[in-house]
Length: 287
Image 1 (cartoon, rainbow, N blue to C red):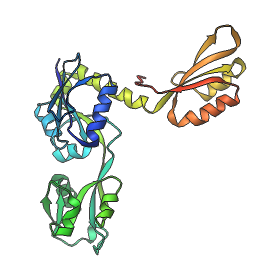
Image 2 (image 1 turned 90 degrees about the vertical axis):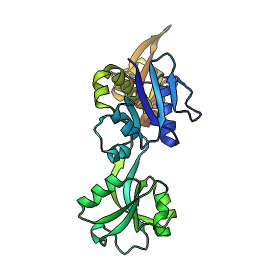
Image 3 (image 1 turned 180 degrees about the vertical axis):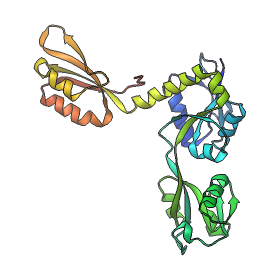
Image 4 (image 1 turned 120 degrees about the horizontal axis):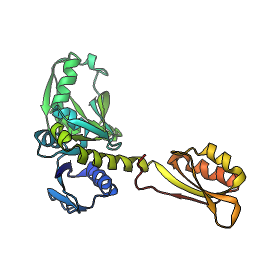
Protein backbone atom coordinates (compact mmCIF):
# COMPACT_ATOMS: atom_id res chain seq x y z
CA UNK A 1 0.00 0.00 0.00
CA UNK A 2 1.39 3.38 -1.04
CA UNK A 3 2.80 5.51 1.76
CA UNK A 4 3.30 9.28 1.69
CA UNK A 5 5.60 10.97 4.16
CA UNK A 6 6.52 14.61 4.78
CA UNK A 7 9.84 15.86 6.13
CA UNK A 8 11.15 19.42 6.58
CA UNK A 9 12.52 20.95 3.40
CA UNK A 10 15.57 22.62 4.93
CA UNK A 11 17.77 23.03 7.96
CA UNK A 12 18.97 20.59 10.58
CA UNK A 13 15.63 18.80 10.78
CA UNK A 14 15.85 18.05 7.07
CA UNK A 15 19.42 16.77 7.21
CA UNK A 16 18.82 14.45 10.15
CA UNK A 17 15.47 13.21 8.82
CA UNK A 18 17.04 12.25 5.50
CA UNK A 19 19.93 10.59 7.34
CA UNK A 20 17.57 8.49 9.46
CA UNK A 21 15.59 7.35 6.43
CA UNK A 22 18.75 6.40 4.56
CA UNK A 23 20.20 4.56 7.56
CA UNK A 24 16.89 2.70 7.79
CA UNK A 25 17.59 1.26 4.34
CA UNK A 26 15.51 3.64 2.21
CA UNK A 27 17.30 4.90 -0.89
CA UNK A 28 15.83 8.31 -1.68
CA UNK A 29 15.80 9.28 -5.35
CA UNK A 30 16.17 13.04 -5.77
CA UNK A 31 14.86 15.47 -3.22
CA UNK A 32 18.26 17.00 -2.54
CA UNK A 33 17.87 19.83 -5.03
CA UNK A 34 14.89 21.59 -3.46
CA UNK A 35 12.32 19.50 -5.28
CA UNK A 36 8.98 19.00 -3.58
CA UNK A 37 8.78 15.25 -4.16
CA UNK A 38 11.14 12.29 -4.01
CA UNK A 39 10.56 8.58 -4.44
CA UNK A 40 12.18 5.65 -2.68
CA UNK A 41 14.04 2.98 -4.67
CA UNK A 42 12.05 -0.26 -4.96
CA UNK A 43 9.38 0.92 -2.51
CA UNK A 44 5.85 2.27 -2.99
CA UNK A 45 6.86 5.23 -0.90
CA UNK A 46 6.75 8.96 -1.67
CA UNK A 47 8.43 11.73 0.30
CA UNK A 48 7.29 15.36 0.29
CA UNK A 49 9.63 18.17 1.38
CA UNK A 50 7.57 20.84 3.18
CA UNK A 51 7.99 23.66 5.65
CA UNK A 52 8.17 22.21 9.16
CA UNK A 53 5.24 24.36 10.30
CA UNK A 54 3.01 23.11 7.44
CA UNK A 55 3.61 19.40 8.02
CA UNK A 56 1.07 18.83 10.86
CA UNK A 57 -1.78 20.25 8.81
CA UNK A 58 -0.80 18.33 5.67
CA UNK A 59 -0.87 15.16 7.77
CA UNK A 60 -4.16 16.05 9.44
CA UNK A 61 -5.80 16.70 6.05
CA UNK A 62 -4.66 13.31 4.75
CA UNK A 63 -2.46 14.79 2.02
CA UNK A 64 0.35 12.73 3.52
CA UNK A 65 0.14 9.76 5.87
CA UNK A 66 2.87 10.67 8.32
CA UNK A 67 5.79 13.01 8.79
CA UNK A 68 8.70 14.30 10.80
CA UNK A 69 8.56 17.76 12.34
CA UNK A 70 9.09 19.53 15.64
CA UNK A 71 6.76 18.81 18.54
CA UNK A 72 6.38 22.58 18.87
CA UNK A 73 4.86 22.71 15.38
CA UNK A 74 2.50 19.85 16.21
CA UNK A 75 1.29 21.58 19.37
CA UNK A 76 0.94 24.92 17.59
CA UNK A 77 -1.20 23.36 14.84
CA UNK A 78 -3.52 21.95 17.53
CA UNK A 79 -4.90 19.15 15.32
CA UNK A 80 -5.51 15.52 16.20
CA UNK A 81 -2.60 13.33 15.12
CA UNK A 82 -1.07 10.06 16.33
CA UNK A 83 2.31 10.74 17.92
CA UNK A 84 4.44 7.69 17.14
CA UNK A 85 8.06 8.31 18.10
CA UNK A 86 10.37 10.87 19.71
CA UNK A 87 13.44 11.15 17.49
CA UNK A 88 15.94 12.54 19.99
CA UNK A 89 17.20 15.40 17.85
CA UNK A 90 16.17 18.99 17.20
CA UNK A 91 16.02 19.64 20.94
CA UNK A 92 14.87 23.14 21.82
CA UNK A 93 12.36 24.95 23.99
CA UNK A 94 9.64 27.50 23.36
CA UNK A 95 10.35 30.35 25.75
CA UNK A 96 9.28 33.81 26.77
CA UNK A 97 12.18 36.24 26.38
CA UNK A 98 12.37 39.90 27.33
CA UNK A 99 14.91 42.70 26.84
CA UNK A 100 17.70 42.65 29.41
CA UNK A 101 16.55 46.10 30.50
CA UNK A 102 13.02 44.94 31.37
CA UNK A 103 11.99 45.72 34.94
CA UNK A 104 10.13 42.44 35.43
CA UNK A 105 11.62 38.95 35.75
CA UNK A 106 8.46 36.84 36.11
CA UNK A 107 5.29 36.60 34.06
CA UNK A 108 3.16 37.58 37.06
CA UNK A 109 5.16 40.82 37.30
CA UNK A 110 4.42 41.84 33.72
CA UNK A 111 2.23 44.88 33.09
CA UNK A 112 -1.05 44.20 31.26
CA UNK A 113 -1.34 44.73 27.52
CA UNK A 114 2.27 44.17 26.47
CA UNK A 115 2.96 43.26 22.85
CA UNK A 116 4.39 39.77 22.24
CA UNK A 117 6.03 38.97 18.89
CA UNK A 118 5.93 35.30 17.92
CA UNK A 119 5.45 32.80 15.13
CA UNK A 120 3.57 30.59 17.63
CA UNK A 121 0.39 32.61 18.21
CA UNK A 122 -1.78 29.71 19.43
CA UNK A 123 0.67 28.42 22.02
CA UNK A 124 1.46 31.98 23.11
CA UNK A 125 -2.21 32.88 23.51
CA UNK A 126 -2.90 29.70 25.48
CA UNK A 127 0.11 30.24 27.75
CA UNK A 128 -0.64 33.84 28.72
CA UNK A 129 -4.33 33.09 29.13
CA UNK A 130 -3.37 30.32 31.55
CA UNK A 131 -1.21 32.82 33.41
CA UNK A 132 -4.08 35.30 33.61
CA UNK A 133 -2.22 37.93 31.60
CA UNK A 134 -3.70 40.00 28.80
CA UNK A 135 -1.22 40.51 25.94
CA UNK A 136 -1.36 41.77 22.38
CA UNK A 137 0.05 39.05 20.11
CA UNK A 138 2.01 40.27 17.09
CA UNK A 139 2.32 37.38 14.65
CA UNK A 140 5.56 37.38 12.67
CA UNK A 141 7.30 34.93 10.35
CA UNK A 142 10.87 36.16 10.56
CA UNK A 143 13.41 36.43 13.36
CA UNK A 144 11.56 37.40 16.52
CA UNK A 145 14.69 38.50 18.40
CA UNK A 146 14.86 41.88 16.68
CA UNK A 147 11.21 42.76 17.32
CA UNK A 148 11.70 44.47 20.72
CA UNK A 149 14.63 46.53 19.47
CA UNK A 150 12.77 47.96 16.47
CA UNK A 151 9.63 48.74 18.45
CA UNK A 152 7.46 45.96 17.06
CA UNK A 153 6.94 44.31 20.45
CA UNK A 154 7.82 44.49 24.13
CA UNK A 155 8.86 40.82 24.42
CA UNK A 156 8.93 37.65 22.35
CA UNK A 157 7.98 33.99 22.45
CA UNK A 158 10.40 31.97 20.34
CA UNK A 159 12.35 28.74 20.09
CA UNK A 160 15.57 28.66 22.09
CA UNK A 161 18.38 26.15 21.75
CA UNK A 162 21.63 27.30 23.33
CA UNK A 163 20.41 30.78 24.20
CA UNK A 164 23.32 32.45 22.40
CA UNK A 165 21.02 34.22 19.92
CA UNK A 166 19.06 35.76 22.77
CA UNK A 167 22.27 37.04 24.40
CA UNK A 168 23.49 38.47 21.10
CA UNK A 169 20.27 40.44 20.84
CA UNK A 170 20.36 41.56 24.50
CA UNK A 171 17.41 39.39 25.52
CA UNK A 172 17.03 37.13 28.53
CA UNK A 173 14.95 33.99 28.81
CA UNK A 174 12.19 34.52 31.35
CA UNK A 175 10.08 31.35 31.25
CA UNK A 176 9.88 28.08 29.30
CA UNK A 177 6.49 27.29 27.77
CA UNK A 178 7.38 23.82 26.48
CA UNK A 179 10.29 21.56 25.56
CA UNK A 180 10.45 20.27 22.01
CA UNK A 181 12.24 17.79 19.78
CA UNK A 182 11.67 16.16 16.40
CA UNK A 183 8.84 13.61 16.37
CA UNK A 184 7.08 11.27 13.96
CA UNK A 185 3.35 11.90 13.77
CA UNK A 186 0.71 10.23 11.60
CA UNK A 187 -2.77 10.83 10.28
CA UNK A 188 -5.15 8.95 12.58
CA UNK A 189 -7.00 7.21 9.74
CA UNK A 190 -3.82 6.42 7.83
CA UNK A 191 -2.32 4.89 10.95
CA UNK A 192 -5.32 2.61 11.13
CA UNK A 193 -5.51 1.63 7.46
CA UNK A 194 -1.77 1.46 6.80
CA UNK A 195 -0.62 0.36 10.22
CA UNK A 196 1.66 -2.38 8.92
CA UNK A 197 3.55 -0.03 6.59
CA UNK A 198 3.72 2.83 9.09
CA UNK A 199 4.75 0.67 12.04
CA UNK A 200 7.40 -0.98 9.86
CA UNK A 201 8.92 2.39 9.00
CA UNK A 202 8.79 3.62 12.58
CA UNK A 203 10.38 0.38 13.80
CA UNK A 204 13.18 0.76 11.26
CA UNK A 205 13.95 4.31 12.37
CA UNK A 206 13.77 3.23 16.00
CA UNK A 207 16.32 0.50 15.31
CA UNK A 208 18.69 3.13 13.86
CA UNK A 209 18.32 5.35 16.93
CA UNK A 210 19.03 2.41 19.20
CA UNK A 211 22.04 1.28 17.14
CA UNK A 212 23.60 4.75 17.27
CA UNK A 213 23.88 4.43 21.06
CA UNK A 214 25.66 1.06 20.89
CA UNK A 215 28.91 -0.54 19.76
CA UNK A 216 29.65 -4.09 18.72
CA UNK A 217 32.64 -5.41 20.66
CA UNK A 218 34.71 -8.49 19.80
CA UNK A 219 37.67 -9.94 21.66
CA UNK A 220 39.57 -13.17 22.31
CA UNK A 221 39.73 -13.88 26.04
CA UNK A 222 41.27 -16.56 28.26
CA UNK A 223 38.77 -19.31 29.08
CA UNK A 224 39.33 -18.90 32.81
CA UNK A 225 38.10 -15.28 32.60
CA UNK A 226 34.87 -16.11 30.78
CA UNK A 227 32.72 -15.89 33.90
CA UNK A 228 34.14 -12.45 34.64
CA UNK A 229 33.29 -11.31 31.13
CA UNK A 230 29.75 -12.67 31.35
CA UNK A 231 29.27 -10.72 34.56
CA UNK A 232 30.75 -7.53 33.11
CA UNK A 233 28.88 -7.68 29.78
CA UNK A 234 25.39 -9.11 30.19
CA UNK A 235 24.57 -7.61 26.78
CA UNK A 236 21.12 -8.11 25.32
CA UNK A 237 21.17 -11.82 26.18
CA UNK A 238 24.73 -12.28 27.45
CA UNK A 239 27.83 -12.31 25.24
CA UNK A 240 28.06 -14.70 22.31
CA UNK A 241 30.93 -17.13 22.95
CA UNK A 242 32.69 -19.02 20.16
CA UNK A 243 35.55 -21.51 20.08
CA UNK A 244 38.82 -20.57 18.38
CA UNK A 245 40.29 -23.06 15.91
CA UNK A 246 43.27 -24.85 17.44
CA UNK A 247 42.93 -23.14 20.81
CA UNK A 248 41.46 -24.53 24.00
CA UNK A 249 42.79 -21.79 26.27
CA UNK A 250 41.04 -18.87 24.52
CA UNK A 251 37.51 -18.18 23.27
CA UNK A 252 36.06 -15.39 21.18
CA UNK A 253 33.30 -13.18 22.59
CA UNK A 254 30.95 -10.86 20.72
CA UNK A 255 28.73 -8.44 22.64
CA UNK A 256 26.70 -5.27 22.15
CA UNK A 257 27.51 -2.52 24.66
CA UNK A 258 26.62 1.12 25.24
CA UNK A 259 28.97 3.64 23.63
CA UNK A 260 29.61 5.07 27.08
CA UNK A 261 31.06 1.71 28.18
CA UNK A 262 33.65 1.35 25.43
CA UNK A 263 36.58 3.05 27.19
CA UNK A 264 36.23 1.06 30.43
CA UNK A 265 35.34 -2.15 28.59
CA UNK A 266 38.50 -2.15 26.47
CA UNK A 267 40.73 -1.41 29.45
CA UNK A 268 39.04 -4.11 31.56
CA UNK A 269 39.43 -6.69 28.80
CA UNK A 270 43.11 -5.84 28.39
CA UNK A 271 43.64 -6.36 32.13
CA UNK A 272 42.05 -9.80 31.77
CA UNK A 273 44.52 -10.78 29.08
CA UNK A 274 42.19 -10.28 26.12
CA UNK A 275 43.64 -10.07 22.61
CA UNK A 276 42.36 -8.79 19.28
CA UNK A 277 39.90 -6.35 20.86
CA UNK A 278 37.75 -4.70 18.20
CA UNK A 279 34.79 -2.30 18.36
CA UNK A 280 32.49 -1.64 15.41
CA UNK A 281 29.56 0.69 14.71
CA UNK A 282 26.10 -0.85 14.30
CA UNK A 283 23.78 0.22 11.49
CA UNK A 284 20.53 -1.07 12.99
CA UNK A 285 19.63 -2.86 16.18
CA UNK A 286 16.30 -4.67 16.50
CA UNK A 287 15.77 -5.97 20.06
